[in-house]
Amino acid sequence: MLQQDSNDDTEDVSLFDAEEETANRPKKSKIRHPVASFFHLFFRVSAIVVYLLCELFSSSFIACMVTIILLLSCDFWAVKNVTGRLMVGLRWWNHIDEDGKSHWVFESRKASAQESKTVSEAESRIFWLGLIACPVLWVIFAFSALFSFRVKWLAVVIMGVVLQGANLYGYIRCKVGSRKNLTNMATSYLGKQFLKQMVVEIQQCHAWISLHNCKHFFEDVFLCPLFLSLFF
Image (cartoon, rainbow, N blue to C red):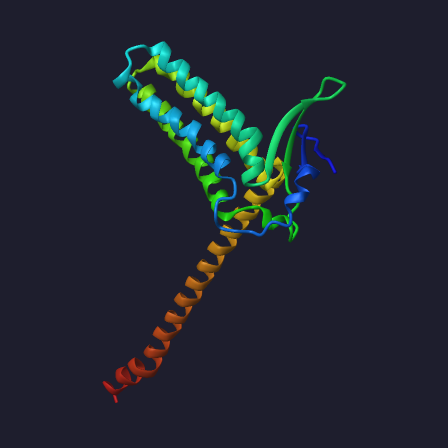
């Protein structure tokens, strides 16, 4: 069933029914889709390796740029359309309705007892590690190219940030839901941190009050009789 987000015209839906035949597969830690797992990392890692080493093996900037952009494009398509669906049961895309209005759709498998068995823990770790680590590296490359005045590489690096960042954002939306859910998560986290800080401050206040009371008790019990004995 489609749930449309009125803020950004997005839809969060359960993954297509074609995956139901995989529900009876047992959940295992081993990799059940080795080809998908390989290509999930191959294109993005290859793009990074070519970016780092291309100047050592080739003097043609155009050839290096075309190779990197081709690898990034293949990675974007493979991760968006294939590896996310097979490895973690997530998928996202955009479609335009009859009125010409754009809709972003984010799919995820229903979290039932049977569906949870279709996702391999090893594949899930591989998927999210590659999905998060590589965009972070491209962001680092962007700052490095900017501060080292390698202006000609900025376009290539920005392409890497945009393509891999888009997949990262799309799958995070699939995982946690709509933007409203993201806001609720942030609010909940801040609320928990605030309550935790309040508890710590209350405990410190109680400790200070207890110490203060003990100090007055010591003065009343020991110091006052000692002071009086000096005069009587």
